[in-house]
Image (cartoon, rainbow, N blue to C red; front, side, top):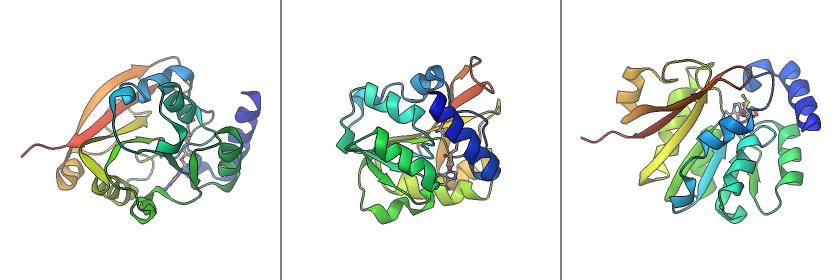
Length: 185
Ligand SMILES: C[S@@+](CC[C@H](N)C(=O)[O-])C[C@H]1O[C@@H](n2cnc3c(N)ncnc32)[C@H](O)[C@@H]1O
């Protein structure tokens, strides 16, 4: 835990725009982010796992390691993830490349990637994630903003709709969790 914090802080200082947080998410946020995964079928993908707070919670929901794929940009974090989570597929590449992994019928994407901090990547990440998802698949996003991390017009363009799952005040900073699903026509 202390080691994760040290690794996280070091990478935050080196790559502040990519990491965008001063500490790994708390266990309470990880529980909210992974709520309901027990009933999901198909592969599960986590993007921007960092040191693995959400990964640990996903596996604690009973998801078999071989169903889980992680896409993390940062090589130092990937090293940590491989050591901590044997059996989980760790891809050291950007989430924008999710369609290149051969995954189909993904049940859920759990995202720690700071989409709010970098609006240009909203289209590049959320669109491709939905293209590899099952019709009932969903995309869960952490944000530090009280409102949805993707503006309404971009949600419409991407054919998705956001609902707020909840807020965790006991996190540094307080975190909100939003879920995106396909818009019904
Ligand atoms: C705020 S940290 C969240 C880490 C972890 N999920 C947590 O909550 O403790 C954001 C993470 O997203 C990663 N990241 C940023 N942009 C990314 C991208 N385009 N694709 C994959 N990972 C990315 C960063 O390297 C960092 O590990």
